[in-house]
Image 1 (cartoon, rainbow, N blue to C red):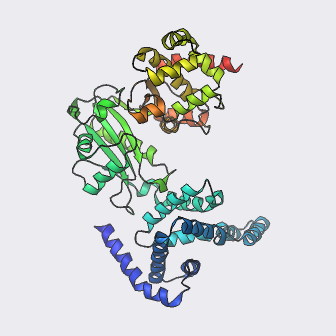
Image 2: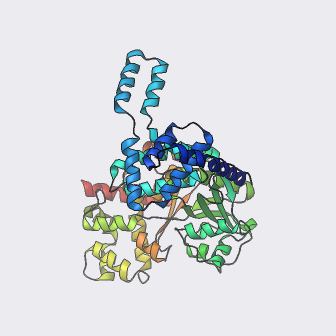
Image 3: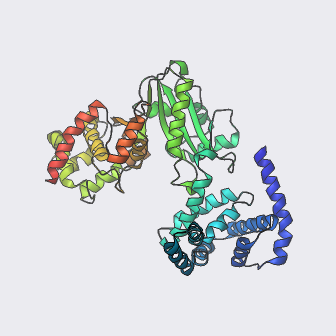
Length: 461
């Protein structure tokens, strides 16, 4: 209600200012932007902001590119003024000169974005604008400064203090439920019946909302309340699975986390969401003993193929051969007279279920190497692992043949991983991983890690 009132209020201000804008200002977009930057009246400023955003909305892709290039070219800091202010501050060290330098360094386009944000629907428009920018950076890296300015502002406007955590259930507004169906990319929801099962009494769904984007879950987390730590995704997303009395559950499995707004990419919603949900579930269901994920390993298959081809910077063919050595005979016996790596890929691609036991042992070794022996701060490190380990989770279990979907097979040959959240040690685990790259593991995985780490090291000697 309050948000709708504010939208109507801003609309009325914009309407009152529209006549002033048309009477006073250059009608080109560049002129409108300069007028917006120099204007002082609230009504005319809001009207100009709305006019700029409406003009942007009407642009085609080429026109939007030119718009961003104009922002980069004409609304950057004045280099001569920055140099003069910097020299003056270095000479005097005075606070006033530091503040003058700070004002000179800030790009004028940041103030433009702030003023655009005052238009009705301005925040949503700027989020969409950053999404467009992100798609242009590879071909137009010079626009990185524009994207960085917008990201800086969005990080302030969407910090944790402005977010509200809400539980979504079957009685939530229909437009919110529809967005769950649209945005779940981890395990796609196959219509309303499927969604209803995912919101049954033994399921939980939590989301962060922001007052500037009413009815839009920025990020949402799906949780299954079960007995024991789940090793397969199928039972968790089966629309016909029996419903468990949540009071009988001893485990909460986080099986799908989704960001819905590409324009908010890079903002740290997920870690806050996980931690808040841990607290809420512990308070609601004190019988829960296990809080864990059932997570994908999105980069594993690509890394394994690169290792086989000699195209991975750290996972070399020699290291792959050493890791496969304990199963060399079994692999060639099952696949025929092939090299171990070729035999592995033949079985994975043609006869996985027939040789499930053998492949499960091999995949556990290879996934553990992928998650624990590659540099955790390297550009190719698994993003899901980095997220949960940096949050303080423990690498608890590797589950081959956990995900039989085509997406799961393509990404990781069907492997999923349990990351376990123990509230007593998450802070310690977080600090060890972030500061030293140390990964906490279950006893079973720690013992296996000792063996494969020695094999990995020997291949580099």
